[in-house]
Length: 154
Image (cartoon, rainbow, N blue to C red; front, side, top):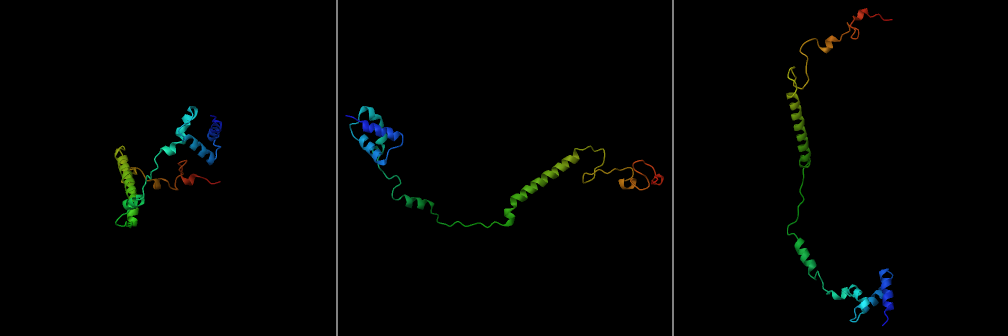
């Protein structure tokens, strides 16, 4: 028997050029009992839908069972969050940063050379000699260290 038409339909099927009616012809052909040995390899491809049992996987009561699972007897209430609760993580982060800065400043002061006295804020004050404000006066020229009266204006 000549199966040239079926072979042409198979070629067109592999090139995705068949219509739905031609694919039905292929399914009908391969659902027969007597399929030639050369075309036997394609039988499983076209008879797959018929060999699988037609069954409803979900069932008629699927929707009812799912709604029973997600149905909650008590309503969910929204919580009211105050501003203090909302900013609590920010407050905690600021407190941690303040602690680290305080500990870092304390560690810096304790590891410094203790030969000169240190003020509370970490600023060292000279204990001898005139203050900066008193040493820079109008009586002496700070660059040449000569009295201001000796400088002649031209």
